[in-house]
Structure formats: structure tokens, C-alpha cells
Image 1 (cartoon, rainbow, N blue to C red):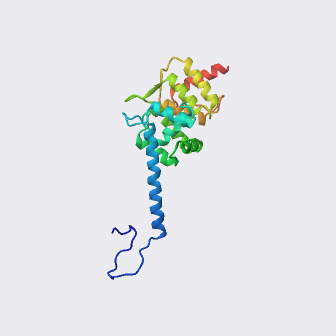
Image 2 (cartoon, rainbow, N blue to C red):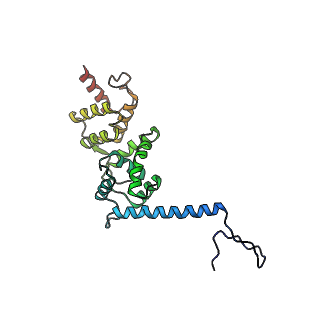
Image 3 (cartoon, one colour):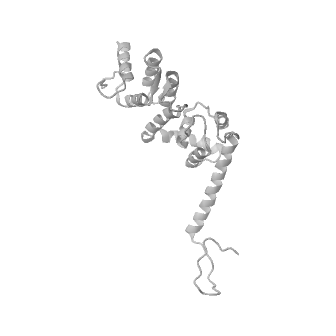
Length: 233
């Protein structure tokens, strides 16, 4: 007969009448391990429900189905936040490892729990200690081609509105207007993307009174400020 995993070792005495017992901490660890295993099993089952059988990943169609089941639009910024939480690498796709990482952290093993976790996830992302990382991630997540370093203006305008619009409405609206009418830039790179985030956080708007073009700002922001000054005059 197999002995219990938490049974005490033999002391050399025969016919011992000492009962085999487990400490409370052993029992807790055993119960916790079983619960964690069951939770992971449910997380995996949920993944395979939405995953494409041939690719072994949740693809754009699977994500849209997930969003529909959660009653959340697939363009909702919280879906991008979910990808950030998973550390998803490829836009529109979740691997099993990424899915496990995100849902385990959110303690969500059902669609209902995942939906309920979204408001707290949004609070987590919007903390200053996390938001800059999310803002950077959102750009990199949209680099869909190998060795791609920049994103076209139309896509950048949509991404700015999605990611930054709720926090810096005026700055985003004016910058999008400028991007759409200017002809010097066809794409935006990560340095310019992060520069605009710094601009929103540091520069007085709309007067730009503390903006110094001699400092290390991307040239596109110098041009934007000049355009704003002309527009205001």
C-alpha cells in the first residue's frame, strides 16, 4: 500500500502505534495545489474553445467570438489591455502560453470572470507606473511585419485616439488633425510615438509656453507646435 505523501518517516521502531498525520500547512499546500491545477485546466479548456484547431492559437476570428461572448466590442481599448496583460507578441493572436499568463494573473477561468476582470485591468493599466509601458506596447503590438519599425499615419491616428484619447483629448485631437494635413511624414516611429506621450505629460497646452525646440524633441513635434502657433494666431 502506498503511504501518504505527508506521512512521517520510520524511526526504526516496529509495530508503532503513532498515527500518520499531516500538518495544517501540508494540508493547505495540497488543497491549494489541487485548486490551482483545476483552475489551469479550466483556463486551458477555455483557450481551446476559442482557438483555431489548425494553428493552435486564438486568431482574430476567435478574439471576435470571445469579445461577442463578453459583450465587449473588439475595438474596445480593454482588449488591447488584455493583450498587454498576456504579453501577446502577435497582433490578433493569443498563444496558449500567453493566454495562461494573462488569465492566471487575472484569476479568470470563465468568460464571466474575464468580463468582470476588465474594469480592474483598466485601472491597473492606467496607473502611472504601468501606463507608459502599455503605451509603448500598443505601438510595438501593431508592428505586424518582420523588421517593421514604423506605422502609417492613418493607423497611428486610430491608435492615438484609442490609447491616449481619454486622457489627453485636446492634444490628441489637434495632433491627429495636424498628422492628417501635413505631408512631410508618411509613417511614425517609436521615438516619435513616445515623444508625443512625453509632450502630453510635460508641455503646457494649448499655449506650449514651456516648450523648448532646442531640447531633444522629435522634429515632428517642433513642426506640430509651429503649426499650432500659426493656427492660434
